[in-house]
Amino acid sequence: MIEFRDVTKRFDDGTVAVDGLDLVVEAGTITVFVGPSGCGKTTSLRMVNRMVEATSGTVLVDGRDVRGVDPPTLRRGIGYVIQQAGLFPHRTVLDNVATVPLLSGWTRRAARARAAELLELVGLPAELGKRYPVQLSGGQQQRVGVARALAADPPVLLMDEPFSAVDPVVREGLQDELLRLQAELDKTIVFVTHDIDEAVRIGEKVAVFREGGVLAQYAPPAEVLSRPADYFVAGFVGKDRGYRGLSFVDPVGVRVGDVPTVVEGAAVEPADGWRLVVDGEKRPQGWLAPGAGGEPVPGGSLYELGAPVRGALDAALSSPSGLGVVVDGEGRFAGVVTARQVLDVIEGRRG
Image 1 (cartoon, rainbow, N blue to C red):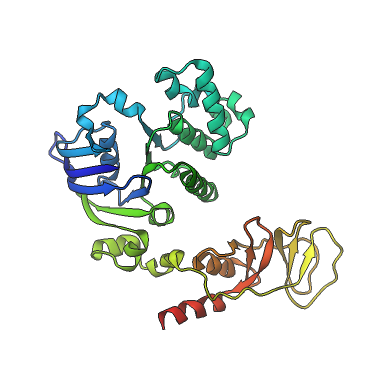
Image 2 (cartoon, rainbow, N blue to C red):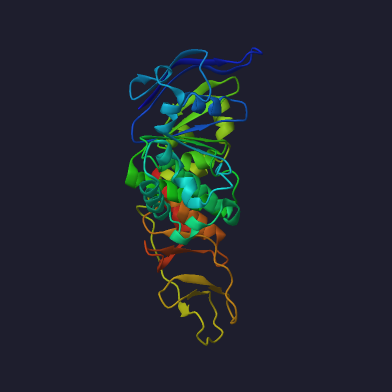
């Protein structure tokens, strides 16, 4: 558990970065700090590992005041992930990940064995361990950064806008990877972002900061979206917060229909309606338009069966056919949904 008790950070020029912060991050949860630039979210994060010292108040980790712990010792027990991964360019990927265990007194052999395990854990092939950071993509570098932060198995993980420098598709994949890892490892994670969509997607609780380092609201994401504490939070979350709130609405009542399919590469005749192209394992590959053959049209996003209704609506609205493609947990075609069906379910809940 991480606890902020009336914590204030005032810099030498008089600027107040954090003002009287009272907040508890429960053990084994992901808490997201979100807000505009200059609101104190990163400063608050860095006071946990004493990269920034509080002016007043107390920061505790598992009931212990961080000021009573030598900073290097404290930091070796707290994982830290930043933008651009912060990897050592002159070390291989494997040696980057092995850095913290080595500093903690592990033998080189044990540290590198642990590094190899962690590369597998974050979804990177073993052969990447021999490469240098410059030889990796941005998304791969961020995965290495997460692996390095986990190397000494710290109970606490601090993440300062770790995915903001990668493209949206890679970013979503990294968010999914973080949620998967958390389900396995059960760490206490504080994650900083300026993106409210990212905050509500990964956070079990969301702390919204306003300028001046004041905590405006601290609540589960569904509550932040549905019941913002004030006009500032409502404005920051945005006018489309009702749409974002669909991420927390279960799909009970959403009917899954069917549509004709054709196997990729098979000869097809023109037809009146849309047809979904699937591969040999029934994984969607795109759409054939009415009356058309040839190359399939890209099919928009996919909706995994049982996920919240926002995904179903996204799939239907992004599909060229107006039919959202539903897949099972293995990515295989399971049916289709329409936006009208999803909206009828939502309206029925409100009624």
